[in-house]
Image (tube, rainbow, N blue to C red; front, side):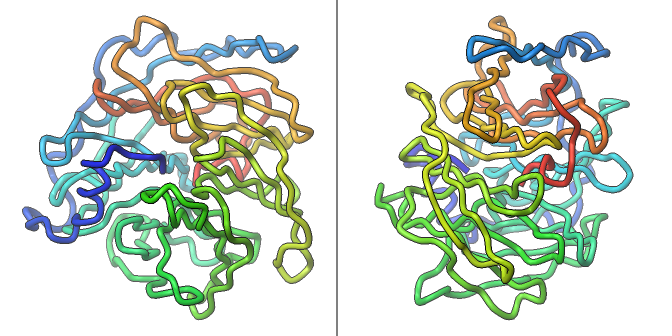
Length: 351
């Protein structure tokens, strides 16, 4: 999640106080496609030759409109299930409106999967351990899980970690199903209190792996599960945490300094070649780096598509190169597609 306007931060903090206007699945669902979707064959993959290379993304569909209650819509956490359906969350959706949405990207249709009266969900990931969908509730410092169909909501983790409540933002799973969470503490105050927290797959133990970070945001394992890439929103940098055999941090260093101008670093995904996809808040674009920090390309939406100001994350089709990124702004919440430089893997599934 990114630095939201003060009004929206206040809305998130008080989300639990909103009156519940409808439990379970919203039968109305999100809005359908709006406007031209661009070519159906996203075959204009760029040959990556340098930092000035542009990859053009094409509009697929609009999923949400700005909510009157919160003044925003903000799509996050794109992730594929085993059947190829794409799940996204709407961070600022009010009670009764779809907070988790399932998209059939081939048919360009969508349906509501889950809503409730308090959660402000900033990421979504399917666990390799139990197959459930895990969501971070930024406002309440919790991680919750759902059955794949959106039923059976459970609180997986809640409470303080080392004496302080989390503001959990994004999730990365290791191969055993343990969770690595970006804790964005200090974001509202502008202070470097961010952390990386490891939660065992049974939810019984949470351990702080790194702290004093500048609004920890994106988090993803590298392609070989040897370390974690994390983005720090208020410093516009990507750090690399090399892990030891027990899942702890063996070393930590700044890997990439993102020249974002007015934009800030949002979420991260990684493809089969180890390339990083860094979302930008404040610009409707995504930057691609290789694992050595070389800037390979910028993914851009068409200039004619106005009213969009944030690309939070991306999911690349597992085993394929079609990538879907979540794009939001005053014009609504959209999916855009582009052809990625390499194939999708688990680490390419949002977070």
